[in-house]
Image (tube, rainbow over all chains, first blue to last red):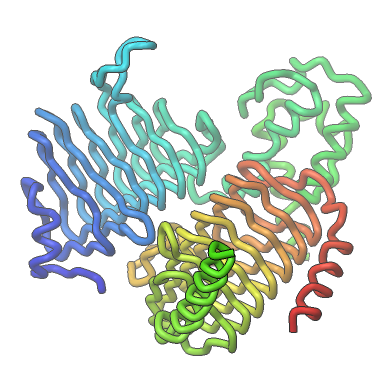
Length: 259
Length: 201
């Protein structure tokens, strides 16, 4: 069922690529087509197209470079119309959309146009399921993008980012930096407690907010409910910034779990 | 009149097809219960262990359902589960789906970082078990992340990403999924459901 290296079917499906490394493995039937562009793929490439087909395209004069040991899940839509680079050892989850163009000119103009900005993804990145990566996105080495995020900016190396538009939540691999961690939930809880329209950044100064007894109460209750941690209002007031509050909460959660 | 007869004949054909399909397309599974049916062809890649209970229905009509287990992976699907099309369930350690769970289309349930590659060297990231409680309902395009536990009778809204624990009988949604409210008619619905199944027997 899985097409393997030397398999004529795998080679046939990757026939439009300029270079393909050793032992590529495809599951299902992906569409890989260089329409006048170039596709270069490293060793041990894995691409799943089951249950939903993936497609890789490279437009005229464009380059799509995929490093060694890259794995891409099913339902992926990857298009290069200038440059897309995926570094060695990066893994990409299912239903990822990764394009360096939006196929459009001005609003209302329905013709296909390409205003491109290269998309560069570093080495050993972990990109979650259903992530959308639009033109101009640069993801640093070892960064992690949480499932369902939308990335269109620069994510620094080793960072963990999530959300639509993805915000940096902390360091990759950190327990606090998962979707159920304090870093992902706290800004949203804070926004709800303050009733403000914008989600605060993690380095936001806590003393700069207009605290009332009511909003403090709402926040501590929300933290108790969503993160199973009790934090008193004074701690929130005394903490310098949101990042520090995240650290405090994660410390308490860890202690609770080990108990 | 003629339309009614045609409808009944079509239903009968679909029923026979789905019963036979359950026997044919699920042959790679270690265990399949009675009256388990498939609509069109699912993909099964079984390197570990896959067990499917009775009265399970798997719909692969517009996009196939895929079940895959790695060498140490176990997929347990209990009785009366319904899985809609385009869903991927991948286990490198363990994915357990409780009785009467409903899973919407294009769901992703995988206990590894990139579900669908159960033979891949995974580096330092360990797979984490997934458990979905009895009678839970996952709506369309839900992503269940490694380590997630969904309580019995919980409802997950469409498009949600589930990380961590969702308590029983909660309605949860969003990215990440958070509890929105308590499922109001959880008990009534479960009771009605049980009655309906009992009377059908």
